[in-house]
Image (cartoon, rainbow, N blue to C red):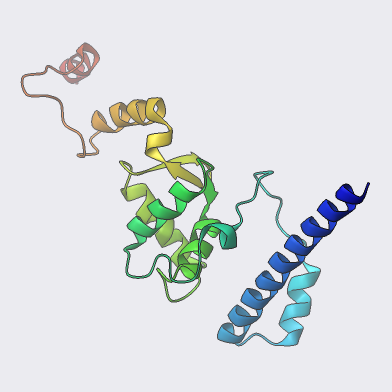
Length: 179
């Protein structure tokens, strides 16, 4: 029984340390944003959004301050996702990792979060949209990325072209003849 109590105490101490670290980060962000205690009470009264994953990523366990300093966003996101042990991440988790690792000077929110989504979308060779707002590395999904590339190549996206000498599918030729 003593070992079980010791294990519980160790787990409790670990979670309390994580909570304290998170509270410190939250306080720093509030100071940067100039939020008042009234804003804090409003935020605390709002329930958190439902999580799409039962295994939320612990940013402090994966990224130390300065880990991503000097990297481009694409490089930093790739490093972060590699550290998640093949677990997809939300845009918010990615933004928090970039901020903690000092790849960005400010926490990305609002329009900047949409811009981050665009950065991920434009780098389809590296990143893959697993679900709405969740991203992983394309290398984790080899079959999915192959299907996706074929779909982009034939629809005028301009990214992929047919091999030299290849003829268009028969259905494309028929559509052109009918018009």
